[in-house]
Image 1 (cartoon, rainbow, N blue to C red):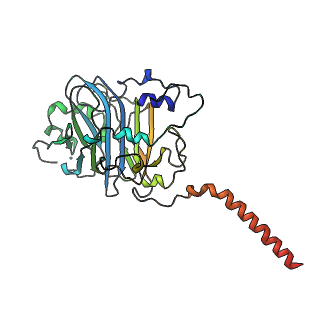
Image 2 (tube, rainbow, N blue to C red):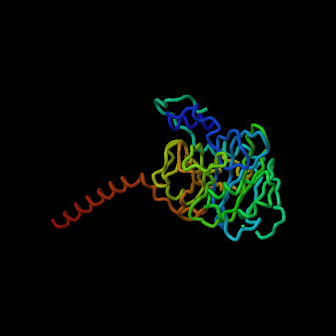
Image 3 (cartoon, rainbow, N blue to C red):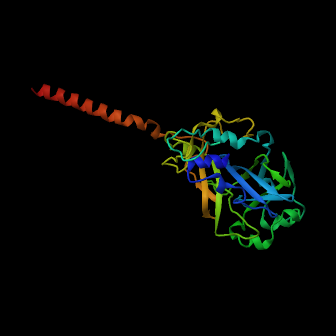
Length: 325
């Protein structure tokens, strides 16, 4: 699905170069392939950030997905709240509905088809996952050793020295599990955080091939965007693509368990190709949940206001001239 859609967004992108295996993210054990990565982020307005993550993968063994997060320090196990989206497996599919594709001529491709305690970390059953929050890098020794990366790997990622880590245990096989979701106490509400760093066979490379769709909600974006254009057209004010309507029009808000805000638009960024191997962040301006007046919504009226002003000036001037006579 992602491959076919991206073909629309860029006629030079084909299914052949979107095969799973390009995108590896951070797993505790070797992985055969990963693909179709989609991430959603939203600030709650109460000092936390929601994060939802879904991908397809193939693994010969039980594995674990490790998501570093910039949690507020000092971090505790209660700094993260896991959210069960087992009943909303199609979460990202519905987000995609908000970006309808408007036909074009000559598309060029086919259809879109940190804690001092050394006790074991608590685990939480979240739908089909078993999840844990690792407050600091030192706390990994409290986790099942199968789901821990060697310290040599973490030494290559000094930026995570004061991060926390959400760990989701994954079953073996070729799977597309339901979305992983949680809410964490964030240290920085000036930019939305997306965990996207890749690790291949214990090595962190300077650049990597990305195949991600990053979704977000923020009232500050809604307060600045213009109208919807098409599924791949960025808004000039935000640099990301806006949905054609608010989330409540096309998403199941009840099944989203508070992750989505019904009266806000969705925005997304297509990350396709070779990029610096870092976590993506999107700068956010304004209040995360309360919209301010968007002057661009009345931009279409400005020419008419100018014309009306000229006409009013003309008649006022003529009236003054008549009085002088």
